[in-house]
Image (cartoon, rainbow, N blue to C red; front, side, top):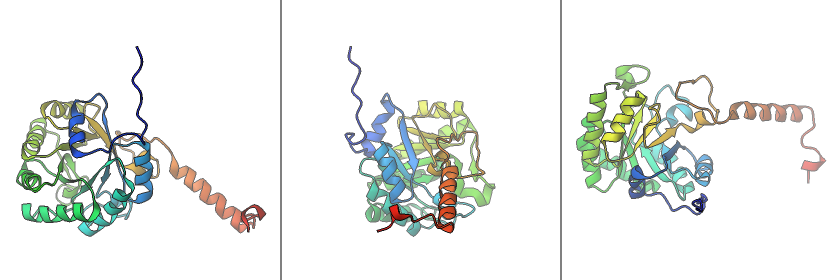
Length: 273
């Protein structure tokens, strides 16, 4: 019996919302990474990632702020446009930042509509389940695909402390996931939730779950790309696996460049016209 042929990243079809949702029943887990600019988005897209999340985490990993709360809609659009320009295959999902949807469905449609029109992204993500069901329904009715986000909710940092709202009650999480799905969400992101609860939620709903710090039972996984690549330091949660140490390598390369320039070794004849 012949083994199935592997599809190279260049040959794979473009990921769409319907294909993403249908992957719930597929053999392979879904893959997602955060991206904030053209350079890294193109690298991840070329590598074959299924989806790119333009996360409001950019407020912390790109802008150096203490939380995601200060990130504006215009900033999200600026970064999302770069990512979407680079992504020829991956599904691009963009976070609705704090106070761009909380006032109500009309505000959410206006904000999400701007994101899709001005960036070419395919979907948006918002924090909440039951409390945002009416907004999710309105967005879906307007033709705007929505990913819901439950578990840890970073945008609530000012109310609940350094990590924001963290849900750990299984019944509450299941209720949120079901409410979001019934309202029309095509996927649910589950953050920082016990593995057995995330698996229970995944089994109960008919759309894909994407986990971060939620164990292996989800239908897919997402990581913040600078963390995955080892570009960040001082952040060591249990769920994070670093697949490279680019911080060390970049520091080494920069230090070597500084040494050679100061010593007059660079540029040499080989690097001169």
